[in-house]
Image (cartoon, rainbow, N blue to C red; front, side, top):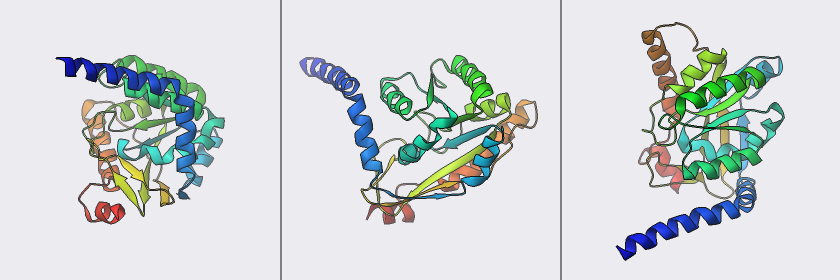
Length: 234
C-alpha cells in the first residue's frame, strides 16, 4: 500500500511539473525537431485548394504525429482545428498544439466525443481547415475510427493523409510503436492525394468510406519488427 501511494504521488507530481514547464517543453520539442533534415512532398495541391476557399482535413496515424510539429507551425495563419482527448496526457499535447497555433477542441471517442465532433464541424465551417489522428489516443493501431469520416461528411472537406518516414529513428514500446526520429535524421513528410469520402448517406456507405481510407493509409504505418522498422532503428 505505501508503494501504491508513492506511485500516485509521483504521477501527480509529474503532471504538475509538466504543466509548470509546458512552455519550456514546447521549445525543447521545437529545438529537437529543428535538427531533422526535413523534406516535404506533395503539399502544393491541397494547400492551393485551401487557399482558394476549399476545406481540408489532414489526418495521420498516432504513431507519426510528433515529427510534423515543426512544420505544422507554418499552418498557424490558417487557424486550423484539432481534437485532442480529455486525458492528462491530452492536456500536455493540447498545450503544445495551442502554442503551435492550432485551435483545440477537447474530446475523443471515449470521452465527450459527440460534443467535440459537433464543435469541430462548427469550427471547420469557419476556418475550413483541421487535423485529425485517425486511430485516436488509444488505438488500436492501424484502425481508422469513425470520427474522421463523420468530420469530412459534416464539413464537405477533402481528406488528405500524411505520412512520416525517417532514415534513423526509435520506436517506443507503446500500443502504436510511437516513432521518434533520431537527432539529425533525414525525415520525409509526405502528403497523400486529396480524397472525397463524403458520398453516400447510409451506414454501409459510411463503413465503405472508412474502410477505403484505412486501406489507403495502412501501408504508411510502420510496424516494429518489419524490415523498414529494423533498418530505421540502426
